[in-house]
Length: 387
Image (cartoon, rainbow, N blue to C red; front, side, top):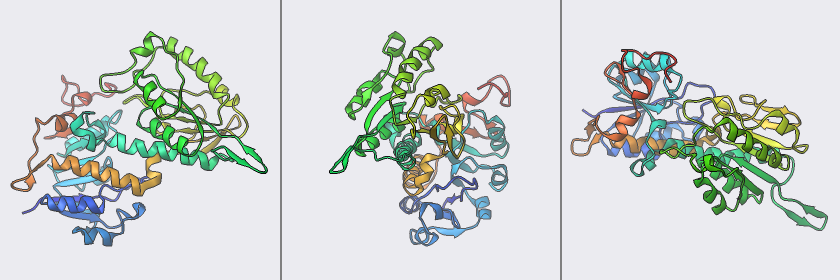
């Protein structure tokens, strides 16, 4: 009997993505899975039920999740959804585990073997499973598109018989995956682009895209990167020096885009009201960290707020604003990870708990929270505040 994969329709109101594409349904079928897609799951990503059916899936209802061996989602399941899953089921999603100890404990009590895709290690083998990169790439692109929509001037320089339109000045704060794509997109649209980041390696990356790098390059800056390639939190002294440099630079910009996130921490405040006040009339700021409290003072969740004369875009789930593209990439990340759990000879689930990808991403298993980042080794349950 084949193992069953259930593709859930997302229940959160602002989640437009889906965990399977037509291509990944075909892939799962070739791996030996039966696939049930909840009716309407792909509607907001422009994938009609009929296309899933043509790829070999069956269109079902939420109650079909009860029989599933694997549940694929975009977001962590709700309590109601968890109650509809069978004990022992594998659940793979973007789990947002930091600070959500109660939710992890609930999945453990339900007997679920759950995996957080955002904990995928950044190693060569796992590049095709890296959801943070695939989604951040699109978020960086869309941030520029949203900024251009709100900004009431053209981005590229335009020379016409009626006069010259100067190129917009765009400043990107944070040159990770999202920031680099924002730089590239703004450059394609003809803007004059600069960027900053606390990681030394970012300087060369920014320059390679044709943007100017802005940073206080002292000794702390030279050591400001973790082994995993993430930015470290900088000292208050460095932050003050960098803030002074950035503040002067921001005053001359038309558009700023902030992308700074530190795993498990509130988003660092990068832009204060005083900086916004110094910008020219009609300036725009896009805060890609609004879901973690925001990089920009005054940013409002899911709104374009007017702050000191600057329009601050605070849309959450920026990748979800281009759901068709985001879903296609996310679904590929998922199916590539799922494939590592399949015995190619028997075409059945064969979870190798010693695999480094499994160990890094597994949150709950066998009735317990098992990920060492989210469990106190001296206690049988997670202790709130440990993170």
